[in-house]
Every structure is written in C-alpha cells, then in structure tokens.
Amino acid sequence: MSANQFKSPVIRWIDHRLPVFSMLHHTAHDYPTPKNLNYMWNFGSLAGLSLAIMIVTGIVLAMSYTAHVDYAFSSVERIMRDVNHGWMIRYIHMNTASFFFIVVYLHMFRGLYYGSYKAPRELLWILGVVIFLLMMATAFMGYVLPWGQMSFWGATVITNLFSAIPYVGESIVTLLWGGFSVDNATLNRFFSLHYLMPFIIAGVVVLHIVALHRFGSNNPIGIDTRGPQDTISFHPYYTIKDVFGIAVFLLLLAVVVFFFPNAMGHPDNYIPANAMQTPAHIVPEWYFLPFYAILRAVPDKLGGVLLMFGAIAVLFILPWLDKSPVRSARFRPLFRIFFWVFFANAIALGYLGGKPAEGIYVILSRVATAWYFIHFLIILPVLGMFETTKPLPKSIAEPVLGGFSSTPEQAYAAPRRS
Amino acid sequence: MVKPDTNKKSASGDAKDPGRRDFIVVATYAMAGLGAAAVAWPLIDQLNPAADTLALANIEVDISKIAVGQSITVKWRGKPVFIRHRTADEIARANATDVADLRDPQVDIARAEKPEYLVLVGVCTHLGCVPLGQKTGEVKGDYDGWFCPCHGSHYDTSGRIRKGPAPTNLEVPPYDFLSDTVIRIG
Ligand code: HEM
Ligand code: FES
Image (cartoon, rainbow over all chains, first blue to last red; front, side, top):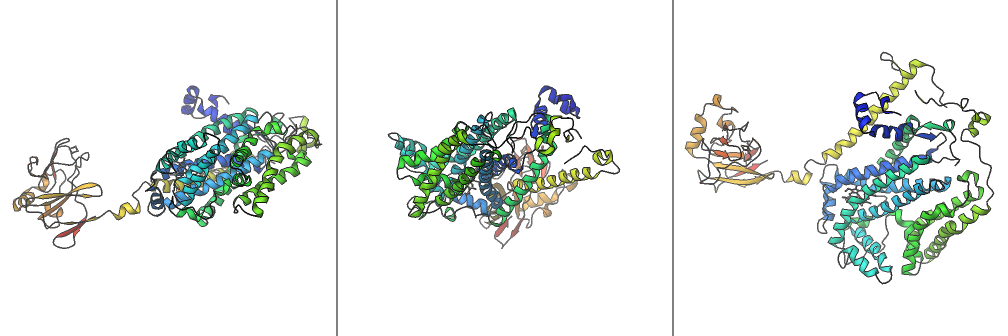
C-alpha cells in the first residue's frame, strides 16, 4: 500500500517521511497469507504475546526486587505480601514463563510436523532455535532470582555443567560465579542478564518475522502459494483468528494464575537458599525436564553435557537432515508415524527427567535418549531417501475448489477490500 | 466461507442504523479497551506505597522535653516535621494578624490543636525546600517564623505564608495528642 492511502493527513505526513505505518501495514495488514492455515498457526502470535507479558511484568517486578543474597528472598516475599497487586504480578510472571514454553514447544512441533524448517525457510527455523536457547537461558537465570533452595541448587548444578569441559572447565565455572561458589556476585550478574536477554530475544523475533515474510507462512499442506487465489490478507482474517487464540490463552492463563499459581513450580523454592544443605530431590523447572533426562541418562560427566547440548544442536542442522522434498506430514505416511513416536518419546523424556535417577528410570531414560537422536540422525535421512509420498495437490485452492482453481477469477475471492 | 457482501447497508452500516458488523467491531474494541484498562490498573497501582510502607506511616513523638521557645524536627514519611513549643508572645502575634491580609487566610486556632504546640510539615509549599528557623541563630524571616532560602518565602509564627513565592501556608499534618506529652503524627 502506498502512503497516501492512509485516511489521516497526520499519518500521511509522517509516513511520507518515516514509513513506519506502511511497514506495519505491510506486515500485519496486507501480508498475503495462505488461506488454509489451521489453529497450529496461532502459536507464533501467542509466543509474541507471552514475551510482551514477561517484559511488562518483569520490569514491574524489578521495581521492587533486590538483587542481593541477604534481601532477594525477602524482597520477593514483600512483593507477594505488601506491594499492591504484587502477588498477582509475580504469579503472572511465573506462570507466563511456563505458558511461554508450552506455546513455543507447540510452535516447534508444528514446524516439525508440517516441515516448516525446509527450504527456503532454514534460517527462519534456525532463528527460532536461537530464540529457544535464549529463552532457556533467561528462564534459568530468572529462576535463580528469588534465591530459594531450588534457585540456589539449580544455579549450582547448571553452572557446574561447564566444569565438564576438559582443562578449562573449572576456570570457566569460577568465571561464571565470580567467586568460589554461587554467591552474591552470581546473583547480581544473573539479574543483569535476566533483564537484558528478553530484549535480545525481542530483537531476534524481529529477524524471525523478517525471514518469515520473505517467503510467507508455510501451511498445512506444505506446498507453495501460487498466487492471489491461494492467499487472503492477514487483516482481518488472521488478526481475528489470532485474537480468538489470545482470548483462549489468556483465559487458561488466568485460571492457573488465580487458582493454581504454584502448580507448575516447586515448593522447595519457598525455602530460603542454604549453601550448606541440598534439597533431597532437586529438579529443574518442568520445561527443562526432557533435556535434564538426557543429561542424566549418560553415565559420564562430559558425555552427558555434550549429549544435552547436542539435543539442541541437532535442531540447528535439522533442515539438512531431512532431505524429503515433501514438507507436510499429511503426504508422508511413514514420517507421520515417526513424528508421533518422536512426540511421545519427548513427553516420556520429560516424565523421566522428573523422576529420581535410579533403577528402571535410568534404563528408560537411556532408551528414550537414544531414540531422540536416532529419530534425527537416522530415521529422517533414511525416510528422505526411501519414503513413498502421497500425491500433492496442485495448489492450495484446489482441494477446496476442484478444477476451478486454475482460473483465479472463479476461485471464490474472499473480499479483499471491504 | 465469506462471500463478497452485496448488502451494502449491513456491511458498512450507517450512522442511524449501524449494521451488525459495526456493532460487533465496536463491541470488540470496547471489550479490548476494558480489558486493557483492567490490566493497566494493577501495573500502575503497584507504584503506590506498599502495605509495609503504609504501616510505617505514623509515628509517636514525646514532646515533654521541648522547652518553651524551642523546636524539634522529626522525620515522618521521609519528610521533616517541625514541632514548636511556642512562647506566649508568638501565640499572641499569630492571633493578632488580620486574616484578611493573608495570601492563604487561616486563623491560628485552626492550625494548632493546643496553641502552645505548633506542628508543621517542614516543606516549603513553593518547590519543596526545607525552610530555616528551627535552630537558634537561623534566619527566621521578616515575620519571625521560618524563612525558605531557596527562593525567599517568609512564614510567620503560625507557619503561614506572608511574603515570597510560596502559594500556601506550611501544611499541618494530621496528628492527635495521645496524652499531654505524646502526640501521634499520621
Ligand atoms: C523471556 C522472558 C522472560 C522469562 C522466560 C522469564 C522467566 C522468569 C522466571 C522463570 C522467574 C522465576 C519465577 C519465580 O519463581 O519467582 C523470573 C523471575 C523474575 N524475573 Fe523474569 N522472565 C522473563 C523476562 C523478564 C524481564 C523482561 C524482566 C525485567 C527486568 C524480568 C524480571 C524478573 C524478576 C525481577 C524476577 C524475580 C522475582 C520473582 O521471582 O518473581 N523477567 N523470570
Ligand atoms: S522552595 Fe521555598 S521558596 Fe522556593
């Protein structure tokens, strides 16, 4: 849309000199979107909303939070008891972190199922994995801030992962701590970084969107859009669909915030940090459990750490592991089965990560860990070579309109201007 | 699926008979606005003093040690409060002033529960400096009360503004006498 199509003369004046309105309009209004997107395409906007909620509530929490080992725990308790609405703001921050991960996991599984990581969207996918890594770092450091027992011991265990690195490991850990154990210096730098990283995430999200709009959204049948008969404008069709998703999301979030605010947390984090005593059973936040299970499955310190990071590293090279030219699982009967096996396996890893590292749980963790890597490193490349895929429709419009799709004028034109 | 709407009236609506779609759009925006306001309020209200801050909002002061003609300064809600044990002469002068001449007309008895004790928030009503006149030897201004050095406001023996840029009298905080010798401020 050209600038002079805006009604307000003020907007026109500004846009002529600083085309922010055209850019916004182009991104969130005109943007031609495949007409067949299903609800799995809602999770991107929900992730964006989650990030916004985290930043707003986080900035507010930081106004009453004290990053010092002697005051951190009581400053959080003061937020809970004395600061106006502080309990609600903190519960929103805590639980939106969990919801953020739920949303992002679903967003990623969507990508896996519909082959959204394939050419030409490899960089889009990689930027997504970068966001995921940054989120994990942010959430980890945020969990340290209330300085409860889980904060302290989580920080100790996770930073100690780096001690597995040969030769320099110990020095790296000392560097991370700024001392000889997790202490005040650690808490201060974690607070600083916890404040910073969400804004870095927001920056990467912008790149993610730029990459998305280069080729447009993928869609449930995974074939390219061939022209206007295959797309509808983002506004109002997908804005309203996203708003509906947001309403459902906020409703569920409100139920958890107001009725089960601590369901996804660990009660031990309401015990002030004690460097002299480790809780009997230490577990990370639920969203880290699958990776934690992989870490513990390996009976070797360095091996466990490498495999855990490897579990994320394979996501980076996924676009080159799965060589099948067909994107959507709808037309890949074998891949589809393996996808669901992988999904169940991921849930199983999460379950096992929360169990004590003993007996049958260790054995099952090893099987599930092995399968995680077999899926990416063996199944996907092999399927790409040998799988017989189902015939693809000629266009997005075709399955709906039959033969008419070839003549764009006859395809039902959703009103493009109303 | 949506077909291009041929019924112009219901699609675009007009002022007298808004179409159903217009109603839905307006209702949606209204609900979103309400929701946004409901969310904004707690985020703004958290800036207000917290419960523990409010709990410290009143103090008790023993005034039995203040000799006639002397003042003490105590801290209340982070601000100085002046408590002056006034001389008979100061009380008489405060009462003798013609209220009609004042910028912020107020009689002295309305400003002191017991005339001997004047309790004031020691913050200049101009731009917030602490006026001089508490300690012996400090400038007390042309009216023998307090003088604000920042921009030259003169207050009288009742803490009323007499000269200079300040718009109103020094504020009297809420207080009461718990006994003859103890007052509670706040
Ligand atoms: C990607 C976005 C973010 C994620 C995933 C995240 C995650 C977390 C988590 C898991 C906690 C621990 C909750 C608890 O048990 O108390 C936390 C606490 C905290 N976060 Fe964030 N956060 C994010 C953004 C922010 C931002 C932008 C700020 C602003 C500076 C912030 C400030 C805080 C503060 C002050 C705490 C400690 C208070 C508390 O424990 O509730 N966070 N964060
Ligand atoms: S602040 Fe006292 S005269 Fe300006």
